[in-house]
Length: 345
Image (tube, rainbow, N blue to C red):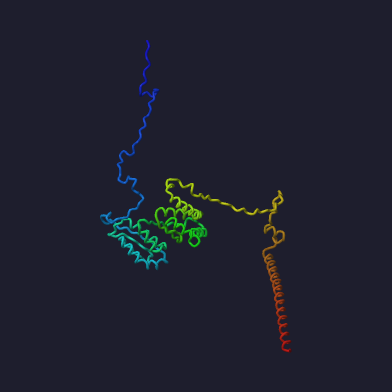
C-alpha cells in the first residue's frame, strides 16, 4: 500500500520553500503639510527690519546687562555718554555709567518694543569697553551689523612670540589689517589680548579664521591672498556652482631645520681600567700625618699658617706702596727743578 509524502506546512521551519520579503519605504512627508515659506523665491538668509507693529504689548520682565571698563576709558566715556544715551533712548533702552565702580549697564524699559535690541545694547557697551570709538560702536545697533570679540591672549603661551604675531597681524603701518578690513567688509581693532570685529556674519567668520590662524603661526598674507582670489571668482556667474578649491592656492607648512656645524671631538684612547679615585679629606690627612695630631695642635698649626700668610701679604703690599711713593717723589722733584730753571732764566 503506497502512501504519498506529506506536504510541507507553511509554518514548518524545515520547509524548503522561501518567501521573498517585501520592502516598504517609509513616507516621511506623510503628515507634513506644505508651509507658506516652502518657496524658492524666498531668501531665508535675508534679515528683515523690525517694525513696532510686530509687538502688541510690552515685555513681561526687565533684562539688563553690565560690563566693566578700564580706568583710561573713563574720560572718553564721560564725554561721549550723552551721545550714547540719545541713541539708546530712541530704542527705549536705559543706560547708566557708574564711575565709582567703573561699569556700564543697559536695561529694557516698559516702552521697549524690540526684544532683540537689548542684546545689541550689550554688544555696544562691550565694544565701548574695548576702546572702539563711540561713533563706530553705535553702528552695531543696526540689524545688518554684528560684532565679535576674539580672545587671543591664550592662543600663544610665550609672551614675546605673542607680541610678534600680534604685530604680524597689524602689519607695517597697519597695512595688513587694512587689507583684511577691505576684503571682509569689517571693522577690526586689535587691543591688548582681544580683537574686536564688526561686520556681517560672513565677514566675521572669515576675519576670525584669519586672526586665529595668524596666532597659529600662519602668516595672514596667505589667507588674504585666498580671499582676494575668492573675491574675483565670485564676480563670474559661471563659477557659482563650481568647487573653487582647484583655483585656490594650498600653502603647506614646511619646517626647514638649519644644519648645525658638526663638532669634531678627539677620540679618547680606550682603556679597560677606570679612572683613579680622588682622595678624600681623611686620606689627605693620613698622608700628611695631620690625622694623628690632636685637635689643639691642629688648630695651632692653622693659626701659625694664617699669621705667616698675613705677614707675607703685608710685606708685599708694603713693597708696592713704597714703589708708588718713590715714583711720586721723583715726579715732584722733576717738576720743582723745572720751575727753578725757568725762574733763573
